[in-house]
Image (tube, rainbow, N blue to C red; front, side):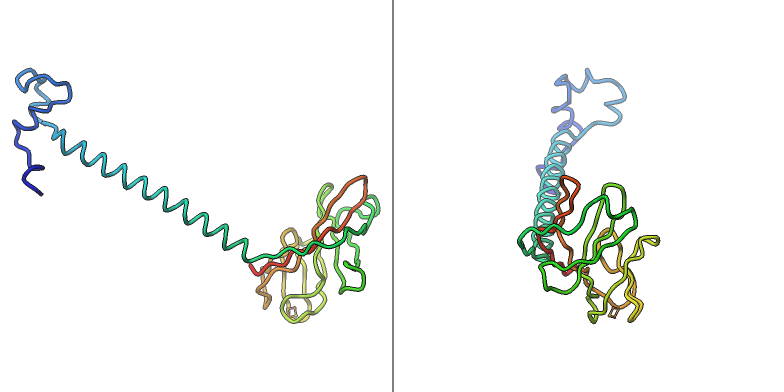
Length: 185
Ligand code: FES
């Protein structure tokens, strides 16, 4: 420790917290004198450390968001009406093409309010996938691949990438496709 930080008992007393002399300090403070300059120095140093940690976490978070944004691309396509809400019960499915002439997409109603739609091709070797709403998964029978139904992310078997997701807009009792989002994670 440097000389200027090595305080004697008297040095500490000369900088008592309440400004009174050492003789006026209570007995407990005389027995356990506080090294006030050193205490303040450590507090400032800890505060700087804290600021550096916070700014480091913030920067890491920004890079993570940027990384995620780079992992997905959204293809905006002409809006297409694909089904009526009333025609699909909870757990029901509907196969459609979007855009017209493309490989099949599959729409699944997973709750009263929520629908999801994905490309029907497995991201492993392009076999058609089959929704199993009762198990909350999408199944690829070719090599026993499984995807999480609400997110389309792979959860078991060979697939490593999520299913391409069809973006939906629901209004006036109708379901519209508005684009396709491709993700790598
Ligand atoms: S093609 Fe789907 S798991 Fe292989």
